[in-house]
Amino acid sequence: MASQAHSAVSAPAGARPGAISSWLFAVAALVLLMIIVGGITRLTESGLSMVRWEPVSGAIPPLNAEQWQAEFDAYRESPQYQQVNRGMSLSEFKNIYFWEYVHRLLGRIIGLAFALPLLWFAFRRAIPRGHGWRLTALLFLGGLQGAIGWWMVASGLIDRPEVSHIRLAVHLLAALLIFAALIWAALDLRTLASAPAARPAKMPTLAIWTLSILGLQLLFGAYTAGLEAGYAFSSWPKMGDEWFPAAAPIYEPFARNFVDNPIVVQFVHRWLAFAVAAIAAILAAQAWRRCIRWPALAVVAAVILQILLGIGTLLSGVALWIAVSHQAMAALLLGAIVWASHRLGRQPA
Image (cartoon, rainbow, N blue to C red; front, side):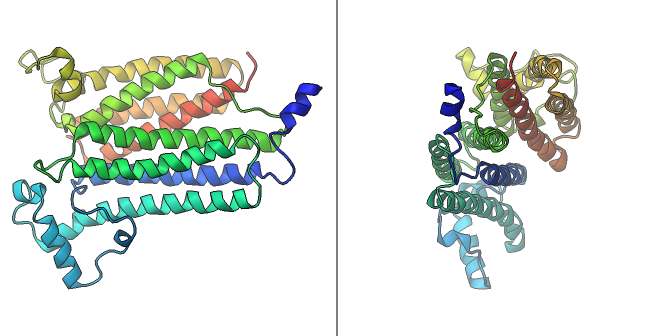
């Protein structure tokens, strides 16, 4: 009885966990859209079209011919134009500028969509006790993500016509971390709305292993994207006529191959997917045995679709919309695993 009274302080009078949960799910949907647009930006090589970081004034795009010409002139000084796109017309420049502009605009919208409601909920004392620091941490992560994005872009504006694949990986993984944290926090608050004595869910050990292996696969997916390793071999299951091409160059020291060698990175990304599938299936089976049916089905469906989209990306020669769908499904798979893990964390064994 005493423990129930202690637990109930998590939802004092005036708290609105249900409304905050819905808001966090909406922000997570915006982050998913951001991840999709980020994939389009990368695949269309649009990320280096805006050569300045202007967090406030950059929200307004060029509005007349003079402003467009100024943006184009600035881009023509960049390594990407000098080494890759020399001779590009202004109309072609506008096409790549569009995706990078939308990507940055979405970042600003997400920042406002999170910060302003957070201030309102805090002012109204509507945030349940113990959840304020989590929401503040998410706000900090969002601001840090904007800085990471520019840190990534800046790597392609000095002497190379492409961004660092390592910085790209940090940027993508940070976005996915924010996406997963939003969903977990929203699920905690949704539970609290229906059960005022509920405590935040604990992460089960199996879920930690599943998310760790998935995180490693997402890292190699980001390396594959940044190194354009998906173009190395467009066949499956073999790479050309071999399981691993014997003529592939091997870097020294050997560990460097797992970061910088496109062929090794593609090979690892291909087969690590099945390790993810295996442990995700174990997680789904455990959830199913505990009558957590919809999250279990979501995990299995997402894993199958993700592997099929990965194979389709290779066989299509990295067709834009298949590759973008593959990146989006990676985020949805992460969301499904977080959902199942959360349910397992609040369900007795």
